[in-house]
Every structure is written in structure tokens, then in C-alpha cells.
Amino acid sequence: MNNKLFQWFYNMPKLTNQDNKDYIAKISLNIAVSLFLFNLIAVLISFFIVTTTENYELSFNILAGALLIFTVYIVGGYSIYAKRKINRVVTDDNTHIVKNSFVSAIYITLIIYLLNSLTNALSFHTSLISELKNPMSYIIPTVIGIIYGVLMAIITWYRSK
Image 1 (cartoon, rainbow, N blue to C red):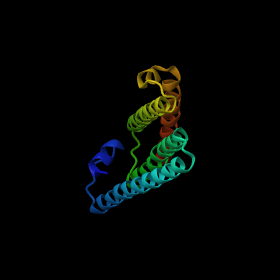
Image 2 (tube, one colour; image 1 turned 90 degrees about the vertical axis):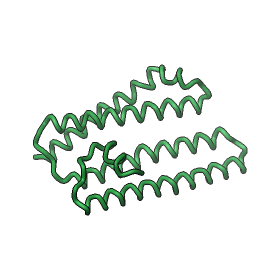
Image 3 (cartoon, rainbow, N blue to C red; image 1 turned 30 degrees about the vertical axis):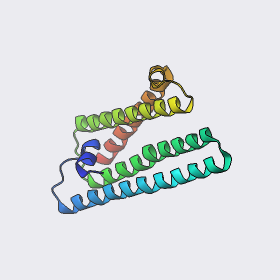
């Protein structure tokens, strides 16, 4: 994972301290290696399920669900934790807190919306466009994004006190 992409996605300031640059490089490498190993294990498990049961749909659902859970929750949570650890200085500016929380909520909403629609389209053998137009495909991620944004704003505001 590129450090600049990591910094842009998590809205991190430009790092000037060499220790922080080394730390973010270590985080990026840990995420890349974790994703590779997890994907390798998930593919081997799904291959084992296909060869023993010949149930391709079950194998695909397990693989898609495992990848969805891992990428969204584990990697996202680790990255957010690392961002919080690097951003030790929190400003008292309320507009800064609201802006960062709003941007994070939009990212989470879009990621969940797209992954949920893609997973449903592949699982139920429907069109991706019809899944994107389905009201439940964008209502649930929007509610989750709003809750996430409010929680991030409260946590950031509480830490700045």
C-alpha cells in the first residue's frame, strides 16, 4: 500500500518527522502482508470446500463474506487506530472535527454501499445495476455512515477536551 495513498485516504497531514514516516510505512506493509496472507488462506479454504463438496455457491459466499468482513472491519479498524496514534495533536477547532468526521462517514458509506451491492449481485445472480438501485442497498449504508460519523465526532471531541 502506498504511503501517500494511505495518507490521502485517511486525511492525514503531511508527515515531517522521520519516526512517523517509518511508522506509517510499517503500517502500510503490515496491511499489505495481512491482506495477501488472508486472501491466500481464504482462497485455499474455498478451494478445499469446492473439491470436497462441489458446492461452488457456498464456496463463493464464504470467500466473499470473509473478504468483505476482513477488508472493511479489520483493515479499516487497524488503519483508523494507526491514524489516531499518529495524529496525537488534536485541534480544538470544531469545524475541523466535523469535517474529518463527515469525510470519514462518506468514505465508510460508499465502501459499504459498493461492497454490499457487489456481494448481493454476485450471491443472488442479479444485475449489479439493479442492486445499486435497490433502496435497501443505499439506506442501510447511509444509516451506518451517519452513526459512524456521529461516533467519530463524539470520540474526537471528547479526546480534544
